[in-house]
Figure 1 (cartoon, rainbow, N blue to C red):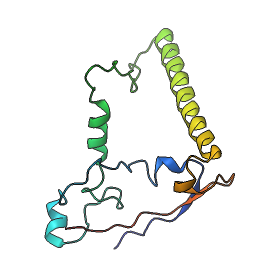
Figure 2: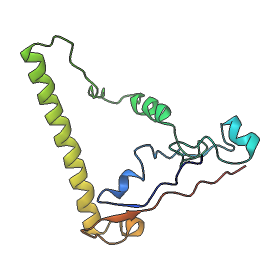
Figure 3: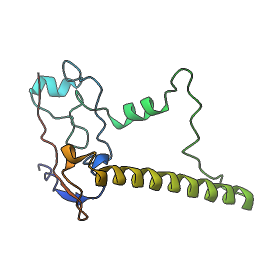
Length: 145
C-alpha cells in the first residue's frame, strides 16, 4: 500500500524546513549513496519519504556533523541531559533551570529570525511577512543519476 503524500501546511517558521529532517548537504553527491535507488533508477530510500540521500543529510549524519567540533572552537554546551533514576532535588532543579535556559535561547533565536523576515531579509525565499504564516509545500522527490 503506497504511503499517502504529505500535505501542505501553514507555518510561522518557514526557515526550519518542511520537516525537522530537512538538512541539505553543502555539495550534493555525484550519485545517490543508496544502492536500492541506483538499481531501481528511482528515489526509494528518501529521508522522511521526501529528501534524496544524494542532496540531504540523514538524521544520523546531521547529528554527527553537529557534534563534530571545529578546530579552535569553544566546546559546545551539553544539550542532551537526562536525570538519573533517583535524582535529588538539586539535580532536578538544575535540570529544570537548564531546560528553561535552552527554551529561552530557542525562543530568542526564533524571534530574531521572525524580525529578519518582517524586515524583508527573507522576501526572496518566503515572500513578504504575513501574520498568517507561509504555506509550506512538500519538496518534489526526484532521482538524479
